[in-house]
Length: 323
Image (cartoon, rainbow, N blue to C red; front, side):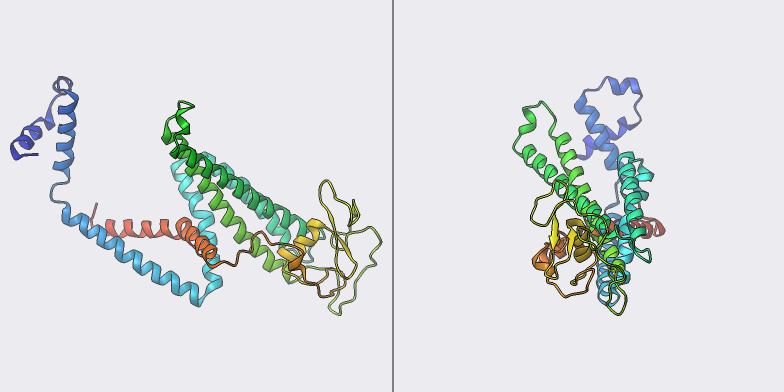
C-alpha cells in the first residue's frame, strides 16, 4: 500500500457510520486494514522482544523440567499429575466449557472413590477387581473415542462431509475434540492406575507375614474376593471367565487380573506360590516401547506444563509493559 493511499484511508478512520455504509466492501476492508496498521505501527521491535522472551523461557523451563524428572522422578510425576488434573478444569471454569466440566467431575468423582478404596487398610476383597475394571474401562473408552475422532478427521480430509452438506470445520472441530478427550483421560487414567497399583501392592492379599492363609478356601469360591465362582475354569462365562493357577487355586478373571496387573504381584493371592502371571495376562497399560513412553510424556507436557509456561511468559510481558 503506497503512502498516499495509506493517508487517504487513515483520514477515513474517523468516518461516521453513514459514510462507512456508503463505501464498498473493498473500501471498508482497506480502512480496517489501515486501522490495524496504524495501531501496530512501530511494534516490530516489541514483538521481536516478546518472541525472544518466549524462546528463552521455553528453553529454561524445559531444562528445569528435565533435571527435575531425572533427580526427583516421583515428585515430578506427582506434581505433573496434579497439574494435568486440575489446570484444565480451572481453564474450563474460566471459559465456561460446561461439557468438559461435567465429564471432568464425573471422572474425578468415580476415580476418587476407586482410589480411596485402593489405599484403605486392610484392603477389601473386591477392591482389586474394582480398580482393574474401572481403569480398564477408561482405557478401552479412550481408545474407542480416539479412533472415532481419527476416522472423522480422515473423512473430513477426503471430503465425506460434503455428502451430508456439512461444513468441514464442524467435522474437524468434533474430531479434534474427541482426540483430545481420548488422550487426556487415557493418560490421566493410566497415571492414576499406577498410583493405585503402588498403594495396593504393599498390602493386597489374604495371608499373614508367615505365609499361612488366614482362612480355609472352600471349593467353588474365588481365592481373592471370597465370592462364589459362576463358571468353572473350562467354561466360557457370559460376564467373566474363571482362571486356575499352577497352584490349583481358582479365581474370577477380573479378581486375578486386578491382583497381578494393578497389584503388581507375581504370586498366588492365597498361598504365595510363585507363578508367571505375565504369560497369562497382558497388561493393557504396559507399553515398554520407548516411543510410546515419549508420546505419553509429550501429552503430559502439553496438558500440564505448556499452559503454565504460557502463563509465565504472559506474566513477564506484563511486568515489562509489553502487549
